[in-house]
Image 1 (cartoon, one colour):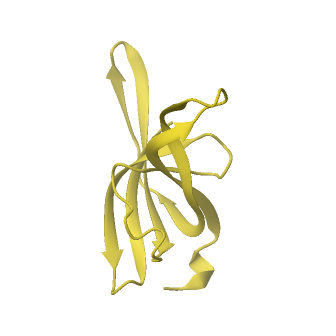
Image 2 (cartoon, helix red, strand yellow):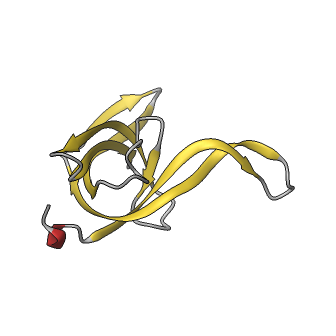
Length: 110
């Protein structure tokens, strides 16, 4: 995998039980890792849903394989750009080569 193509940062999030601001344990998202990635937007689609315009932003994200991200799945999500609050739902995760990288197909709401 060419390191030069991994020129963006994405944060991976995992669903689970987290502590809120009151110290209670609630369902939420915790940060799994922030990694270097290649981010390629795919052609989006627009549709009318429930009388509101909705736009999907399909994106392909390629990251290096590591034991920390090896179990990444559609139950997780990613944030790009980091700190933006723009989240993408993971649709599929495909291993590239033999533990070379992961190709993540994700859909964000534009």
